[in-house]
Length: 115
Length: 114
Image (cartoon, rainbow over all chains, first blue to last red; front, side, top):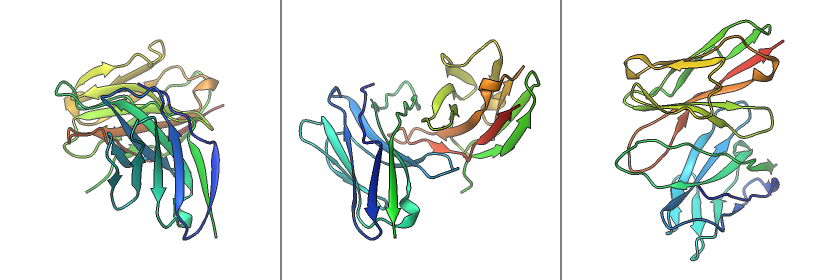
């Protein structure tokens, strides 16, 4: 699986958009970008994933560059409850042979949302 | 729908003692994972089960760690004997084939070895 690079920390004002970048310059064609977050003292939580098109769900939007070498997770209106460590993970897409895959977590980005 | 359940939430033991952690995955999820998270680091996979079969246990320290998933549902992770370096949070997760690899994590068990 491709390696990822994220800034160690970021701050955001409550109510503003939080834009979390991730570099994955060695990503290959069949690898997806996944985002998870971990709020203090909780287990990681799945946020969103994508292959090459931009994706949006009720939690966030994922913007993947055309060359797929980087992506940005966008929390449109950050709240204090969004304070967490955000992990960008790249892994090969699902196959018919397996229903699971190892998630390789890096150090992630500590996002702090300030009042 | 209930999430992944883990017990106990906290455990304090002396070194060389045994310890066991239990996990009940989300109903219908055939894949179960055990991760270990050291302080200030991201989780690392210890073992992955597909139904009853352990399909990825390359990171499991087999001299002292063991795991089982009887009947393809609940799972137990055991450490015997525990060492000081085993102090960490042990996370259980589960997933099912939905076209993606979304994993759902439990709250974890925080182990302290003294």
